[in-house]
Length: 259
Image (cartoon, rainbow, N blue to C red; front, side, top):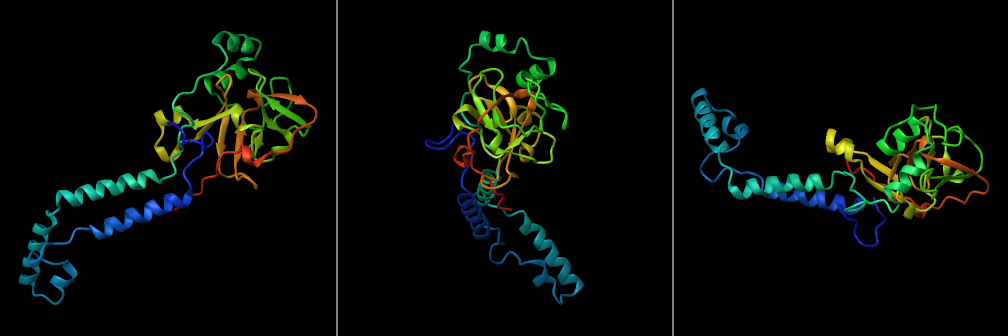
């Protein structure tokens, strides 16, 4: 799904807009809510309050008849309201209409030929390494405290800085921002879309040049971005040396629930 001009891939609509849409939908539903036509009955509590058994039975029959009254206009309003609610439910949007690697298939195959089976499974098949066990393709543990830059073992593009790394307690390398947003793609995980209800869809993170899988990003990270880029160590190569400071502007927009 395409991103609006000027918005970074993976960014979602502002919470204020979503809240306003939800409020509008609710107001429309209330305004157009079903009300029995004049002379055809009234709600049960009023009709039956203090009534005799005969009157109660008559009122109940009237109510049953009234319950069948729903105009096509009101049905349309209810359906539209459901669509509004779905629109603001916080389902992540894909980063781009089409995502294609800038690297050729031959180059990707050559770059991954020397990797282990696990590393290829993570990168090429969106696999996941076991928590608390991961190592980068050049042997650094998932919880390494060394200073440097994490790059793609396929394209060589810089992805994450050790200065934006933090201990999330999950057992995977976690970062609150990428080095450069133009080097990563964030999209709704296509595997989740095939097998899970929409409220469980995750946002997948990929190396843009090779379109190889890195991990997922979540909205439960620390300040200043509130993001947790949860990345497989097996999808990274660590380059020891000076690391750039984390840049919050490179992270996608954090989404807060309105419910």
